[in-house]
Image (cartoon, rainbow, N blue to C red; front, side, top):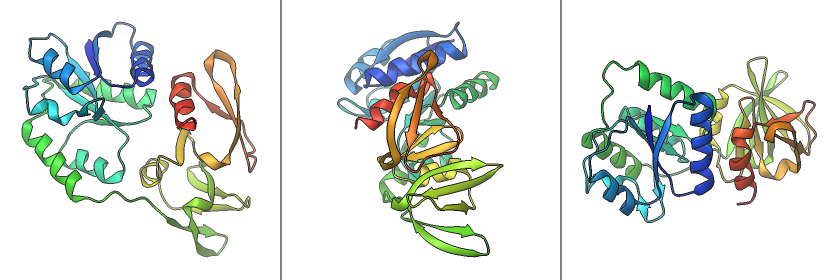
Length: 253
């Protein structure tokens, strides 16, 4: 499979290339394009690529501007750090997307879905127009409060007071900075889209951390990281090698 990456952040494009190689060493990265201008110039000419992985925000604008200047007849999977409203827009318009930071298993699932399509289709102009319409009409907002359960009562807890959220026997648990534990009736995937990515990060498939809860980061074997938190979590919190660079960039932002 030949893949084109459209991404303006070097660390992000290198991480994506690494994940693709981990999933299938036979995948060929044809080129990496870092701007609308470069993408327009490249796609103005014929290409034998099978798939495009395209970030929305590029160095000189948004990637949707590319479609205004050239016609892409290649299937596209968008990568996005948008909130739940944008995700809804992607779903409504049947456009494939991956939420940043890119998870290796989710990327693998997307590639499998692409391969299993008998006749992969390109993203149509109508889909792009529908996506833009929904994005422009929705106001970005994030959860400020969760109604949580503790014993036989429910109470509101502000998201700013939540240090971490994790999966415990299939149930989402939230731990606050005063080290109290509550249950949330939701899925971790949904919670991830409801929280402001500026302050919350999904460090692995089981846990989301708030930045203020992170005390230190230790180097682990094979490029992995261990995160130490306050309040202290009872298990080791490990960040995979695939997510390590993106996680450090988030912490440094």
